Image (cartoon, rainbow, N blue to C red; front, side, top):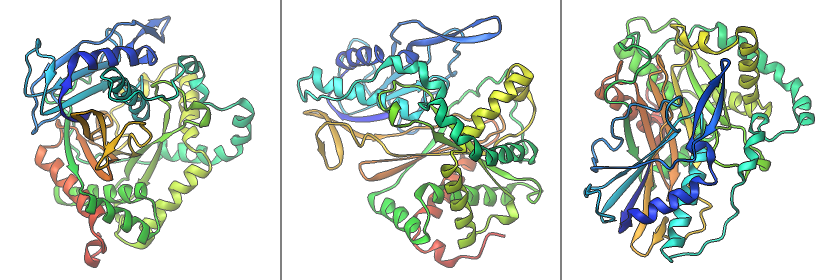
Length: 431
């Protein structure tokens, strides 16, 4: 979702949206099935822009999700106090929500798609005639090898031995969900208030505190949020779950597999996943715990272990024929997902004022929010991004097993953990 402030023209936006979609074909595609094999089929149809009232309490309106077998992978909603469909000139705050099926594109791809829309909007209004390198839809045919040549893949194979060991750990470790409560639903249908998302906007000062704390400890900001998510999950389980010692808490971390050769790739899903497992008794607010997470993430990046998940899925499919058996197991594979998108829209060639992108004389981009999907028995999806020197933390939670109060307490715990300068003033270790 992007948040705009000022005069917004719906007709110009729809035109810019249509132009951008010409270069991002997966966003106008659905999925067909032939002989049990799925394939993309481009409908070429522009999605209807749905007009909804602006709700600052619940900024993401309820959705039924996207069924790729019968609809395209993109839905677009424009939220403003003025919902008259005949009114094209809107004022005040306008939130534009891009709901995208994760099979079609990851967050990095959607960010590029949104950038194209913003630039074309500025061009059509005559505000800024920006020139930027266009994407090349022809590059989509090589996304299955993630921009690498076969020679590069072969050279990387020795490092993948570590990936095989991690794959064994992934399969054999007992992972516990955040709460033993199972979602009461059929056919994986989303709950009525899906998606349930909470947001915390950090101030510039709080953002600097996060950066300074990570630097002081000697880890990355991404590592700091991973550690804080572990702390928050353990603390919540200690307060709400009877047996908190058995099993592992697991965080799934999306890893971007794009290379320099993929810079002109249209919106597409080019990510893998890596997984961090920690026993609750080992999750302690100590330098050794922070360093352990940091070392593991550095090793993952150095050995390109994001590939291991892709290779593992390939082997699994060859053995079992599809992923349905794995998906249908009543088992918790991941406790939570944590993704850090870093600085968003940093390369957009549009004027800025006070750090905010100007799209027209009276229209500016004041913020953005994003959220990873959550699967059954994975209760939390945590997303972090930075825009205009301020961080935003989104918490997507499964409201079938967590209340809004539960989720808010977890988000508050994460915010408290990452923002404080002195590690909670040397609070007692989590035990």
